Image (cartoon, rainbow, N blue to C red; front, side):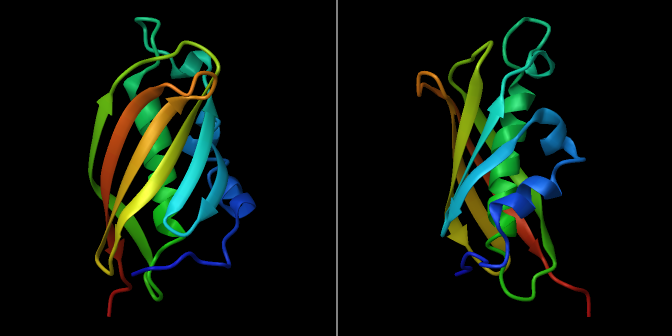
Length: 143
């Protein structure tokens, strides 16, 4: 089982995504511990679909980023990186303003794959907005 890397901190994770999609969307990593990572994202106009509801892709981006960063801080020793090979989301509700939060929890931390579950909620009410699961393939240096 992979364990939490003590050499990667929250500031490093937030800086890592600053000029990429997570930074553009305003995703902020809040906490990390063994098998768990939390994040938050403010809801802005750019997160809303033309039907005036929160775009499903915005929720998926928050959940996938949170699980992905969870994978980064739990990579097995010697692993080079990872890539998402499967994801699924069930959307239960929406918001039009405020912030949404994500809690990602490791279900499997293996040498070749990791499986993460995430729950996305409305920060103001705590109401569940989405359930998410992804499988990450661990990438190793080529011989």
